[in-house]
Length: 253
Image 1 (cartoon, rainbow, N blue to C red):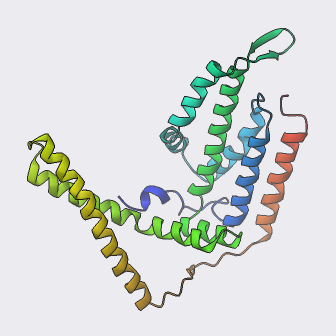
Image 2 (image 1 turned 180 degrees about the vertical axis):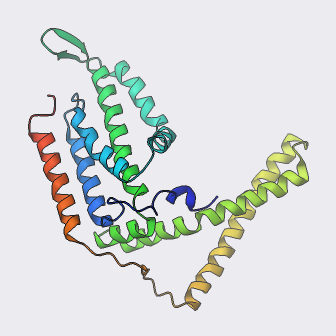
Image 3 (image 1 turned 90 degrees about the horizontal axis):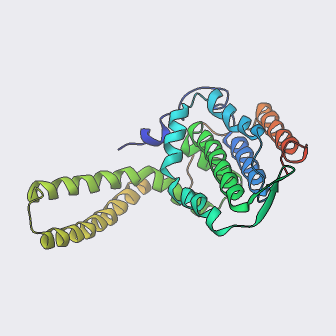
């Protein structure tokens, strides 16, 4: 497993990729805030599809990729959607004469906001290199300690996964899936301890190697971030678009 799994589209070149990560982050945050601010029973209008659709299409991100990753994180939201009609039976008038349980509207709006929000978030992460995204978050005021933790998690998570896969392969070679259940459970718990010990040892070696190369707590990019006119234009356009959607009469009330 490698970083390519996360960054498979982030190193492409497109107008969206060339935008400053801070501009894209602020735009997605504003979009998410507007989605959250909608009334409880208001289903987002079709206009809300425009922003994530433009990010994905102009950025060259396949829609199947968006669908796949949205489904991966959907179980909890789908549970909320399924249970909403059960717990929310408040009568709500739709149109002139139709009255339905509010839970059905809640289910629809939660599902719509989740899909739209995930599409915008995937558009951000798939068109921005992760180190640059973290640097942008740091410049926007996110605590450096949190950014550092995320940076190291991104950098060394795959090394930890490789270690666990090697341990699992060695365990399978010795057991072949035929040992007693009790013995296999005890062996599995032992593997967790071994993995933890190896993680600590690897962390120590990594830190010493970083100190030997002059690490002082600051991560520097090969391509420093520069806010340009296009970033300002992009952010202002998104804000105007969101203001028009939210308060310009396009949102159903």
